Image: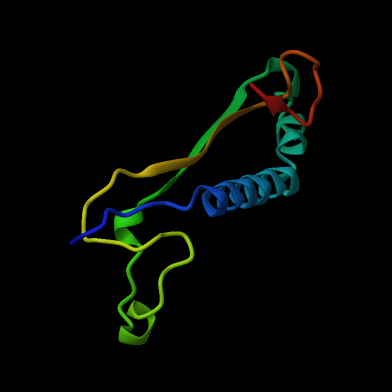
Length: 108
């Protein structure tokens, strides 16, 4: 009897939130609005950043025989069935914000 790979929804949600938080922090720390301002481009609303983070559950296997004995926290009991990639984060950031004019940007 074989079982299909099942993603634990609660752990997947935590993973998505943490990746989103890290991406937001990195963009905040990048201070991109000051670069646009330096080149006189801030007022033109020219910078749009799009990103997507995918998780390929088919790659969640360990090469370590010891680790094979312990289930991955993200996956329930698994079979070798192929399942599609999961989109963890998909966002677009506009600098400056076209709605409010904030030089720090907003999600558009």
